[in-house]
Amino acid sequence: MLSAAFFARASPIVARDLIGVGLLVDGVGGAIVEVEAYALDDPASHSFNGPTPRNAAMFGPPGRAYVYRSYGVHWCLNFVCSEASAVLIRAIEPLYGLDVMAERRGRSDPRLLCSGPGRLCQALGITRAHDGLPLDQPPFELEAAEGAPALAVGPRIGITKAAEVPWRFGLAGSRFLSRPMPNRPMG
DNA sequence: GAGGCGATTGGCT
DNA sequence: GCCAATCGCCTCG
Image 1: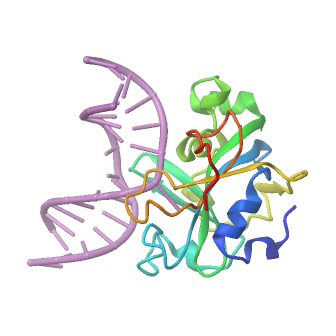
Image 2 (image 1 turned 90 degrees about the vertical axis):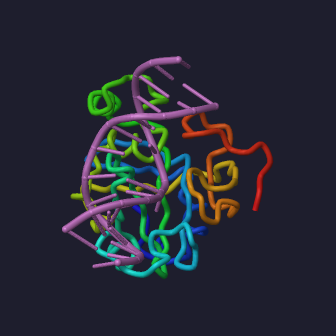
């Protein structure tokens, strides 16, 4: 289990260290292979314009979940870090509870279960009910990465502001990324 | 109180 | 590759 201090750091640092970390929700999950960092002074961040009802969790203590609805349809999971920064979990490699994930997703292709922020929330059963919950208590379970994963770095996906900032981190060569990483490391 | 928009996804051309 | 779906949140009047 990751210590509380793990999240009490700037989100780009935490994001880098999250690659390879095990993420389980009620025993269903896998290894994190893709994340993005968002910071307080970052125009692309939900916290950029100050506290609101939606982003309240981002202004709370580090080490909690920040869950928001995207495009009125999907849920997206973030880990809150220091100074109202957060890490968006974009993709995991599904390892535990594949049958449950397939049922929730309505498809069984492993690459379509958890590759994308909306998909992984659906597969893991994450909703608004998880917003603000501590990450070191059930239903969450986080396990430290084994060894030193090969990292790839690139610009964040799907945003219009600060689109050039290289705060997307991925496991190099993973088949479970939501989209390929740039060939050359950046940043 | 109304209007516009988004850290996405899936289906169709 | 393009585009609709869908709605809570935020901004402005």
